[in-house]
Image (cartoon, rainbow, N blue to C red):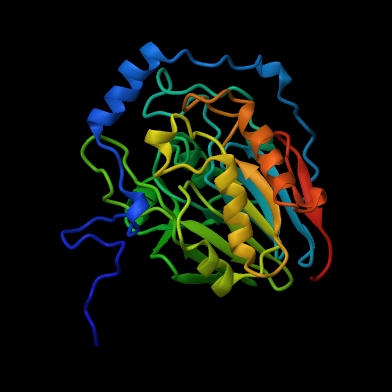
Length: 333
């Protein structure tokens, strides 16, 4: 039996992106962006936050019927999904700021689309990686206290951290799967990195998630740059009905390309998932909630919509959700 490590594992521990376009920039490049580029390239203005529309959530309580799938956007990469009769959260983040403390870090521009106290009983939480805008200690502790029966799935290296914060956690490698109730949940490749301090970079893994219910399939991309495994994800785990993909935090492109897709790449990833079949409905995420990079907050959905149209994809399958918005699919495929 071969003992060779998977390509995304480092021989001395930790993880890496195994593709040539996934090599990350170092600290010197970060300083160039934050100090020199921003001093010479004027930032394009952001809209007033009031322009971002909000909707009243319309998910089922306490749970949806097993054959019904709903998706409600809380904000950023946080969704409430209902599938297979279970309630699922992705990358739960309800804090005001994305950072190690609540007096620093990017501030939330739009309040969460679902108030925390209005959540239904949570059965499953899917974590994609450990960055502060996706893994928030305050939110984790509150979920662990108020939804103690929720089962947490995370990429390798995060089980201990999650358990210390009170959760029932299990960690998976890429392509590994867990079954909870009638759902099959598979960790999928992503192109990103991990860190919660200057001293733990890439010590834990990052991933996306496939959620296979008896009648429908959902893909949650996590936080990722464009990579060559999207067709393989679709081949192994599709066909998908919904694809939740990030479209924001992409400028400046020279710096962000390895770790964040731009809107055009996000549309390309959705078509990659489909192969020769019909593209799943695209649900854009990772925009309009926190100001992380240099593009205006309202630019990503405009570009994503234009790219969707340019690819001659059905307009009805571009699901641009407002914060709090719920969409649903009824019945079997």
